[in-house]
Image 1 (cartoon, one colour):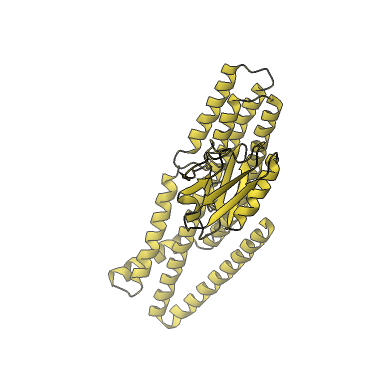
Image 2 (image 1 turned 45 degrees about the vertical axis):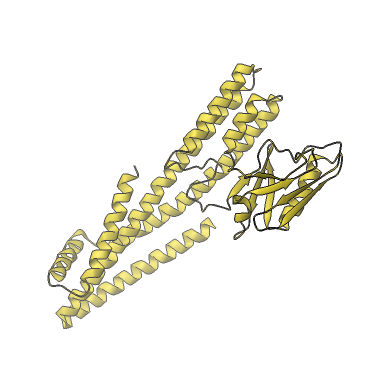
Length: 337
């Protein structure tokens, strides 16, 4: 994918340079025969230059965001590495509480504005996936029970999901059964630690955002009238680790969970670095295209543009819009630092 992108950029640069040279040749020939046509060609050349500057500013802005993301990923990775090393020694209740607090602080940092990572440990620059919701942690639908139970869930559109839990069925078997039943209603279910996470297919999100009516037989859901509840927005991965830190029984297993999060960060780091290579190549291609024009040429065309605008040329509006795009992009880039 990266090699293909670079090939496309190289091809685009060659085409841009060829088109620029051709345009210059045409402009020179046109001006020899028709001075007015020459002025129009010069104005078109200026607009093309402004367009490249605008794109360059946008790419530079993306590159700055990319570098910020890499820095934050590396910092978070190192902070988790320090916590993982602390677990090499026996932990008292107070030390477990301290680890939990450190993870909560890291989670809080990810919730601030202009962070490159989300609490779900995803890149903020990536399109958001389907919204996720979680079931109230007080309702346990996974653990085996000695008695069988039927749980009925009434959805917002009037449909009902029937969950049949045989006596003694394992947590994995309970999860598989629920996944199969919810899939009939375009709802995906997965487990994240002790939490059940739900996500709906496009057009079905209302089935999760609106209240559920749950009715059981007294084991998982108290017998009687239906219980109304709302699904909650899931906590970030670091918050889940923070809660688990206070009850950790096996420190090696907990270290393994931290290592899994670090592996996810490493994957994102490789993705960010690959994106930076593409952005740098694109920026270099634009600079090469601009290098075909000398400072004197740009100054001369800028002066011609000013004259055209003072005379009220029909293309003045396009010129103003192009300059506005450049100004907007440059201001956004300067404020991003």
